Image 1: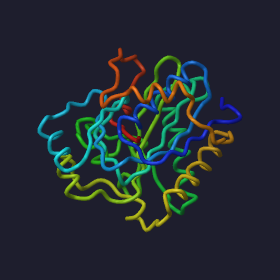
Image 2: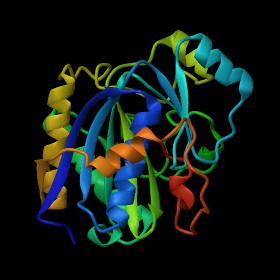
Image 3: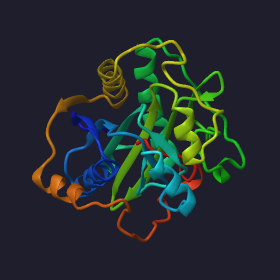
Length: 265
């Protein structure tokens, strides 16, 4: 199922449009038969990312911008996530290298993230399926089925897109609690979530990336080898605005659980 080696990108902080553009470029590469990739990255300042089909409320967007937060829409579905104190991961690969189906692939990658967190001494559990979670605006308000939690509080939120024979999954691992004023501006609640800092894990971002990388290697059965973006990927990412390109949504695009997952991105 898995390739012997996957490309590893360990990026720094960047604006929302670039981050989402890179993830989409990695999906394009995977759909063309290019190398599977695992990417870790941060966000330049605070950004609210909206799911592909999520309604943008003008007053909310204005409040975010007034508070100094950008607003970007993901190509994946799911609910809103406030980025800035999180580590985002992305996995892009030909579908043939991952299990068939959204839930099966999500389960495998959740296992990889959980394995990485275990290396930091953080034990997670999978959330049970919850009816009605898709109606919440905030991704971290209620965990969807199989999302990673600690003590019932959500630690990681993820979303998946399957298109052109390839898979993109990205997700957000909370490193520290979001500032309350920023969450209020974004229209997000304060409950239902936790973070590594709140759990007593003081690992630096680089340590967290290293641990998660080891988790992916172990579960995927592949070596992660550092490699840069290609010129074509950089060009595609640089052309991305705050909104993804319109697309026809495939039948397996999001699935029942994927519709309630986010950003990591």
